[in-house]
Length: 287
Image 1 (cartoon, rainbow, N blue to C red):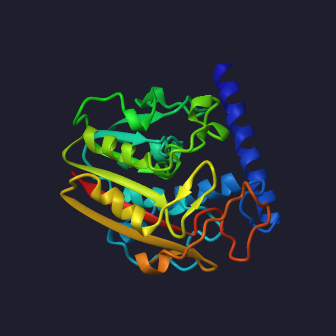
Image 2 (cartoon, rainbow, N blue to C red):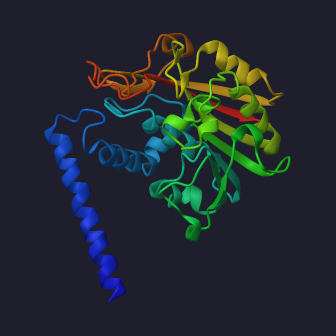
């Protein structure tokens, strides 16, 4: 009886997902419309399971035409991060809980990792039975000993540090802050918990500076500060930029003029179909 109930739930979720996708296509595939979440995650799942595309992200090559059109920067950050992860088993910290989705937890690159996720508060997704450990706390003061992890991912998280996280991510009033330079404290903590030779995979929205309350967009100077605040042995920054043809590899100079689209302040999608950031910086930092 229990198995029949689970099957019924699975069938219901399947049809609900496809119904929402239908609404999304019928509405012209505009970002943040009903069905956008399902559309985005179908595209991300397809991207992270495409070996040829993984090689493209590994080498920072040119992306396919129209790649990720109308989809926010996760369509870049997640395939990029998985492409950088080694095959072997290691201790991995996900600072910010961006990996806390089934397509990522079930990915071959994740299955042999001892994954710890730290975020401010419990979330709907819980993969404890799959071996994921959850810790709730502040990235500016990580509750881990020095050199605890082989790799750390911090994807689209640093831009929220010290800002008004209470408005979206937690009900705790103490996180309604305005301390825009605290991302440097978090960077130092991420460095501290990495073992020598360990790798930090870090992504942030990039371009013209903007502070929208709950996050800030990083400038070239801010990227330089992140790289320079700790004595990294090696550093590499790859830039991707969005336009009306989708996402594409870019350069620091070209991407520095990108402007952030904030769906929370305007409901009108602009002509290029941008969903959020129009450029992203992907940093690979080795301790």
